[in-house]
Amino acid sequence: MGVVRIEDALRLATESDLDLVEVAPQAKPPVCKLMDFGKYKYEAAVKARESRKNQSTTVLKEVRFRLKIDDHDYNTKVGHARRFLDAGDKVKAMIQFRGREQQRPEMGVRLLQRFSQDVADLGAVESSPRQDGRHMVMVVGPLKTKAEAKAMAKNQAKKEDPVEADAEAEAPKVKNERRSRKNAERLPTEKKDATPLSNSMADYLPDELKNL
Image 1 (cartoon, one colour):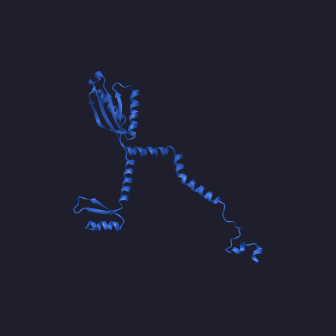
Image 2 (cartoon, rainbow, N blue to C red):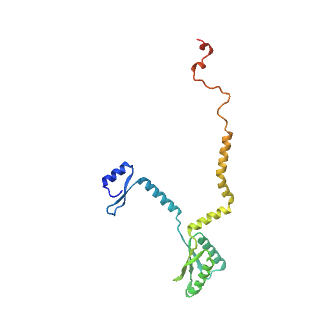
């Protein structure tokens, strides 16, 4: 509309039953817009709520090892880490050194390299092994995001339970069939042999009164 006086802008807003909203106060002159501000705030709140609903936060999970861990415990730890990575979370692998084990950091590096190879199909190394006192740490990140992991898990659940998926697809059809059957079974409200009503009150008088 170009540059107009504030009084004219307010009058146009009142006549249009809209709000005069300042959208660029730093501009010279300031820029305003005619809009339904209540509707705008509602739509913005809906968008923010949907954005928070779809937002997925990656969590850093921790898996601890001993330098002299046996194969059974190691496989159990790897299983936990694979589950975390498959769900879209990061994994921090930590080795705790005891006593003289701190003098053999190369053994810890080899253990963490073995671990990274065992989860390579689900995650990639983001932080190489580094020693901090009695601990050695390595971080492995997932190959797929949290949202992708959730979507894949949902699709897999549908594939594993086709009966439930078919039931969801058939639900509208069954509902329509029931409604049609109920309408067909409904008794007619009109009687074919019913005597039509008359608009004359004389038709409802006894015979002896009709001859008066």
